[in-house]
Length: 324
Image 1 (cartoon, rainbow, N blue to C red):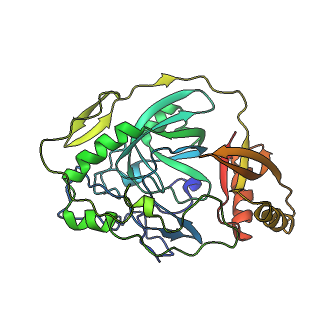
Image 2: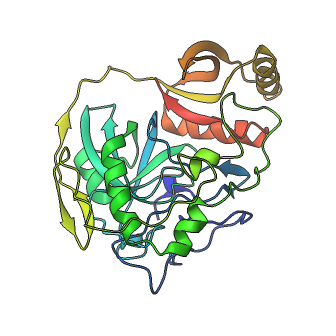
């Protein structure tokens, strides 16, 4: 396993604080599940002191550092029961529903592809998405191992392949995904404005209303993305778009985006205690004005990794690496 992935990637249930060996099958998969995959969102879980909150987020659009995984996981189960093929265009994400389609753009060279999210990870701090080997090759970072990327969910296309996956998902698993909201997982003392710890939206567009499996004619694959059907799954084609990107995209560690000056002050005080100074800038999200607290710009991914780990160890567990 390459050192930048940090820890083994497996699916972890709520309350599990350690990861198993790389060769272990992910929890929630195994005999009896269709290899074409099930629809799965999942419950909040914790890795190395950091909580992750899976949810249906069809407006997802974030930047960060991508990694990739390959031979060590080839032909093993993914988190939603599919069989991982390192030569297909798939990816692992910490919170997005499985399956979903995302566009990943390498911000260093402008290469952009569409991949199918069918796994959980990566769990190394500071990584936003784990690409298949083929995806990393097409984006041009299989050699260095990491890249600055933008990840955007394709909303309508993701709804289409989710509807198809629901048809093959056993009713008890759909009930687990779409049932009553779980109890809020513990959070740090500094809260990020606008995030819901109850996560009702992560379970169903109509919170608390269980959805029955979809029945009837097969759901057609999305017509807006080139691809093919493989064992009941829609697999994106290896089409590389060349998109305009800014030169010299800067790397930051973002501690949080806060709605109140009080939380900004708390974050800056915590950073000051470990010898770090932060910049504060405003952004508009969903009609709200938020204050982004960041450290940077930083000159390398290694520097960002080191700083991120220091900040998380200081108790600011919402911190992440972003590219701007």
